[in-house]
Amino acid sequence: MTTHLALTARAFGASSFFYSGDHDSGVEESINDVALEWGGEFNVRYLEKPSNFMKEWKGEDGIVIHLTMYGIELSDLIENIRNTLDKNLLVVVGGAKVPGFVYQLADYNVAIGHQPHSEIAALSVFLDNMSKGEARKLKHSDAKINIIPSERGKQTEENRKE
Image: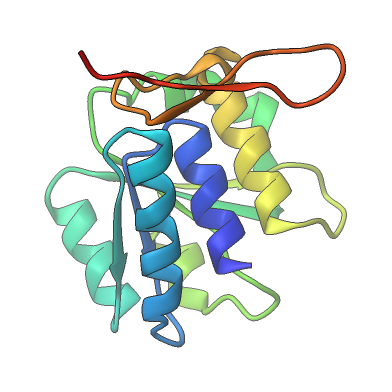
């Protein structure tokens, strides 16, 4: 799931991915390989103490957004959150046992619906709404490979460096 969260964050325009829990260098290597092949700059970093990281983020005038089914409906907050784009945004997702400090430190506890759902789905819906759908069109000039949109089949092309 960690790899899929990172891939989703990257695909929807995030520049970095932070994770906690078990350190997994395989996840980091896999994500770095994707960034090399598909382009763009994307950083992956393991956090041993996420609470300290969140406090530091906020202390540096960053905004923390926690995606949770217990939060306030996205449509009620999206404009307020878009108005913070001049700051660094940290989007936090977690599994079934999110520590209480996440809810307390978050500037926004945002619900992508009030039913159980995937963290990956929540992240993609949130980032897509933040960009008003523009993130789905993201392409990187340094990609080694590009997709050629096709109604049927899979078509790609190599990005030749001249």
